[in-house]
Image 1 (spheres, rainbow, N blue to C red):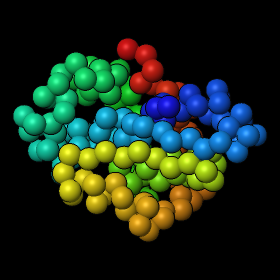
Image 2 (image 1 turned 180 degrees about the horizontal axis):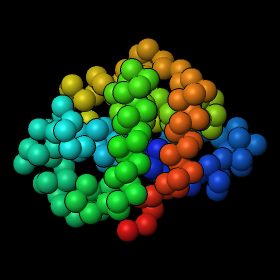
Image 3 (image 1 turned 60 degrees about the vertical axis):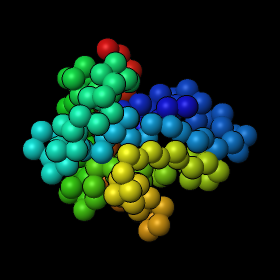
Image 4 (image 1 turned 90 degrees about the horizontal axis):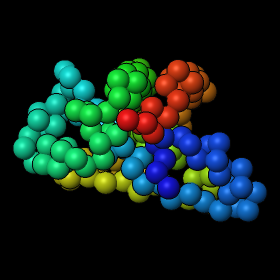
Amino acid sequence: NSYSLLDRRFDSELAEAVDNYNIGLLPWSVLAGGLLSGKYRSGSKKSGIASDDSSRFNKYPDYMARWNPKSATESTLLAVDEYSRIAEEAGLTPSQLAVAFCRSRKFIANSGSVIVGATTVEQLKENMEPFDTPVELSEDVLAKIDEVHLRCRDPCCTL
């Protein structure tokens, strides 16, 4: 299943069932096609990567339209900005927050994992950091994430 800060439908649809039967989730697109990495935010230190012709969303403009910064909904892009700010306040990169959040879910932490993708070795190292040095998100950070989620519930699930 797809599962990320932008797509938490699993929480209300299947989380209870997999917990009851001790089945783990192996979610894909935990970075929402790279949108949650922060590289597509204006003013990002990584924004040069996103503007490169080889960037996934530039190379394949119809790819994952719900996460493409050129076609994603305004609420999706606002949520991404808010999650990026939460990451910065917590001393994490946006990618690290996204991966750590998914890994903090009981149905992933107890008997699942996450699928991460990367275009460069640098991105892979950043995405693997929450595995190498497990990141424990504080109750305060999780509460801030939930506040954004309640305002922008699964924004990428509609176009």
